[in-house]
Length: 199
Image (cartoon, rainbow, N blue to C red; front, side, top):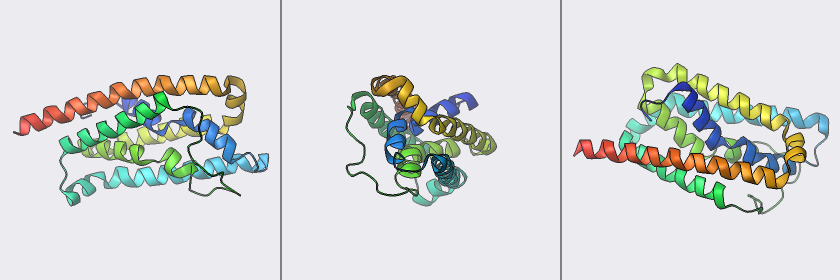
């Protein structure tokens, strides 16, 4: 991921945040909330997710140095995680992500974390920040753009759900899973290549 462009970073972040795949969850969790309150909750949860991911963007290099991790190992680990997430996106059925229905107004869990700022998104921003720390402002802009798109999609979650339907959402999520699979394989190959050069 060292030579990744700004636009590629935005796309990758959108893939791992999976706003389209989160539409059914947001609609389900916010169903019993007053319509006037729903948009405020979505904006608040996106802001929390942004703050969490921004923290890891800024501290990514420090965390790697603290834990003694190399970029190649993080690329390989990130590739494996992305690959598993991609498989889940491709083969997941209509079963709910969370077993029990959330009662009352959600706060942080499960909407901000782990739906938007999940382990994969956190690993991705750490890889971005650590692979090219001199481009930190660019990664922050990419994260901001991805969160903005996520927010826009989730604000229209109910309309999108009614317009496309469950089958349409599932098909689109599987398509994103296929794209994410290619990204995961590329990360793995780069990690393995960097490791071989170290030997």
